[in-house]
Amino acid sequence: MINVKRLTVFIMVVSLLYSCAPAWVGFGAGIGIGAYKYIEGNLERDYPLAYEKAWDVTNEALANLQISITESLKEEAEGRIEAVRRDGKAVIVKLKDKGQGVTSIGIRIGVFGDRVASEKIHEEIARVAGLR
Image (cartoon, rainbow, N blue to C red):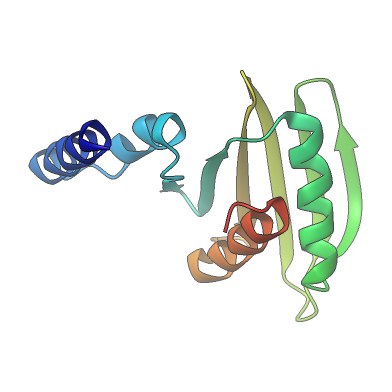
């Protein structure tokens, strides 16, 4: 338990010293923090889920939020879901298998992105996956 606390403090210090949110992403999957990175309107998070499970959980989360899927493409290690919210804004979800039971899920809403709405979808994904 002490090692986890020390690691957490170390990560916080490194993040604060370098003012770099992506530093959390590298450590997040390893210790289960589940950090986010937000780049150019895309909110991405690594989940401790196998790709197949992440795909199913994502589809269920979108259905729970009443987001209609318009197009879905699932390949071996990557997938893309295009959907529309009730207000007409487009939602693009990209899944990528990172191996060892970790899947990266990126969400973009609208043309420029909507961080708050993307976080809501990520929260629902985590809830459906049993991670919250």
